[in-house]
Amino acid sequence: MTCRTNHQEDRVAATQIAIDLAKAAAAAAEDKLASKVVAIDVSEQLALTDIFVLASAPNDRQVSAIVEGVEDRLRELGVKPVRREGERDGRWVLIDFSDIVVHVQHEEERDYYQLERLWKDCPAIDLTA
Image (cartoon, rainbow, N blue to C red; front, side):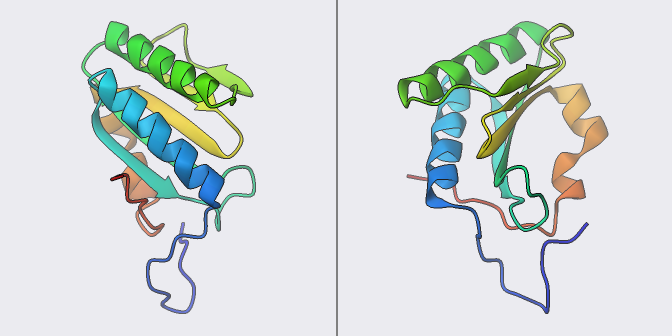
């Protein structure tokens, strides 16, 4: 999969709303001690969302805590998830907020599925304030 055309520079095409939500979700995940938190602009590749936010946790309980923290923070901003998948297993939870999709993964799933590698040609979102 590629997000660049004609040797474009890494330019973010995601909407500002999506970027703001991704930053809020990333901050919430980090507040719950998530590791390897990154955001990838997939807007030119996918019509369904602008940004993937990826976060890891060392165990199932921590995955759940991160998911709750992200949902709580975005709810404070008036955004509710459209759907949530994978909660039962607690190894990889996907939370779809339309503009962004948050993937909270157990570290083993993160290493195995390597979503960053799959979307490596898409621009990263700078999550700093």
